Image 1 (spheres, rainbow, N blue to C red):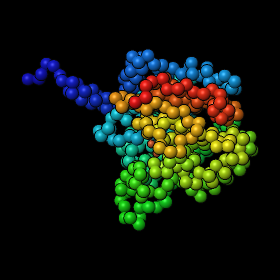
Image 2 (spheres, protein in one colour):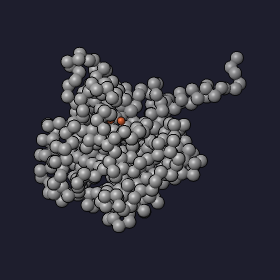
Image 3 (cartoon, rainbow, N blue to C red):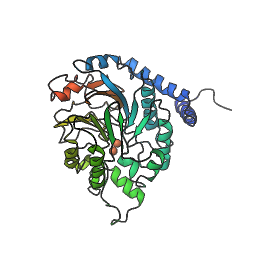
Image 4 (cartoon, rainbow, N blue to C red):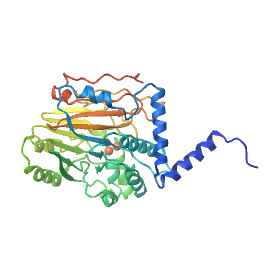
Length: 373
Ligand SMILES: [Fe+2]
Ligand SMILES: [Fe+2]
């Protein structure tokens, strides 16, 4: 005889089953479910719902020319196969839902890399399936977690070449593969999965530092050669194109050489993933901004944090999505940007164009509005 009352565990497992069943076709219902949960969570805390950026937009606009291009970003989802970990799958669904609710829709969505956790076909296929639900065009960037199982074979079969550029409304955009490592695996006789897991780890002292590499630097020089110095330039890289903290690979080893190629441009913005936190820097005319992750937030590195970084609160350990989120980039006509961090459990934070233009003197973002743990 079937029991009349179902235990919490049974109900959870049934819901989970149903959720993943609907994921097969990714119908509207899955998104409504995630969206409703996200809105409810924000509303009970008196926070601005995830897609209500309007007040932030107004305050960010002071003294700046109107934003010409709107980009939404989603990054670092680190998907496992869905029967291993469904939390990160739900987080990516939530980000896709956030972006789909933006009105007007962004010019494009930039995916910042580390879609997969261990570069496996099932992880990347799942990610591609979820990202297909985005209404706006999607530009993909690759991260080390996507790459080092098969050296990009699967990722490229889904998304094309990782290095490319395009022009949009007078701005030149470039996406780089910034996680090129020297071969540390052949001499050690490592299997593809051993290589992948080594790259996925921190503090192991075995892998090489990330680089853009000579080949891509040449490509970048050639690509930029036809543009004048006053062309607004936005570069997307997975790792920061500067040296922050080597032991966690918050670092690009040939950063100075890449910066030397970008230096002649009057205004350059580099938007990067990988660091899973609010991170802002400026080196000469190059303005750098890190993206939030949908999977987990990294703590700040013990050294090397750039002076312009606005520290975010340490995430609440009782809330697995605290410190996570997605966001927007608003590109002005001079190529500089307002960067909007859409924290899922806190009010959004805008790092306005004026903040980096004034070297941190003007439009200083508000301090964290929630306790630090
Ligand atoms: Fe990541
Ligand atoms: Fe990464």
